[in-house]
Image 1 (cartoon, one colour):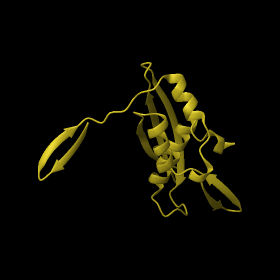
Image 2 (cartoon, helix red, strand yellow; image 1 turned 135 degrees about the horizontal axis):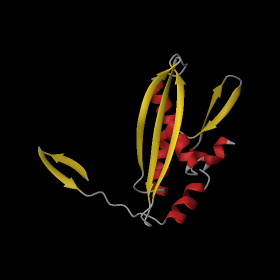
Image 3 (tube, one colour; image 1 turned 90 degrees about the vertical axis):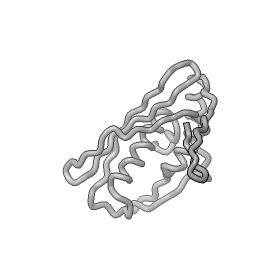
Length: 139
């Protein structure tokens, strides 16, 4: 349900999406991401190709309607932030597909974003790859 407010009056609107069969969802998640949605960045001497977390979210909206992302824990371990999360995808067959992942980021990283934020976005990308989305980027 989505709550909206107009002139102080709240209305509840049902957000509808069509669940798809498990096999169809998994096949769609396994399709490669169009290269125009990918970015590159330098890390040391290497150039890495990646898909930003917000693009992953858009692909999940289209390929796995009703998906849900949950950060299960955020911990500081040996100078790094470690994030554990779970991606859940419901299907029309009544299945709930769960994909858990872990990612870490040094507290003193070169990133301008907070370490927990970087680790959480990496965690989402890893969980999505376990479901098949963007898996080709991890080769």
